[in-house]
Image (cartoon, rainbow, N blue to C red):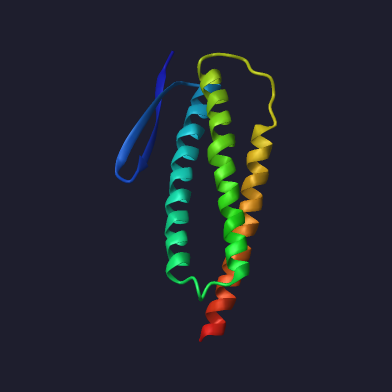
Length: 134
């Protein structure tokens, strides 16, 4: 069978993922690499925002802290439970196992949607704060 490689260029590092053409495991491995990288980026920006909140604690409103706490809670759930469970399933699929359907993907999609809403509301409350400070 032909071998193809999915290439990811992230931060100047090329990661080649060998996979067999037209095989479901190829797409699963591709998604596994992408979601792992995105999770690390989300954690980086979360640490930056936590530092900003601690440095400007008196200027940050309670609403800002609540929205960001919700975002962090969702990120912790995704990192500690959903992504490891999805990675376990991905490794099993890559290994050739046929697994029964799971709702984990739907939970991940719902968590992403809730995180998006919380990020938008967090942004609006920050914008409102910036406008009030001017």
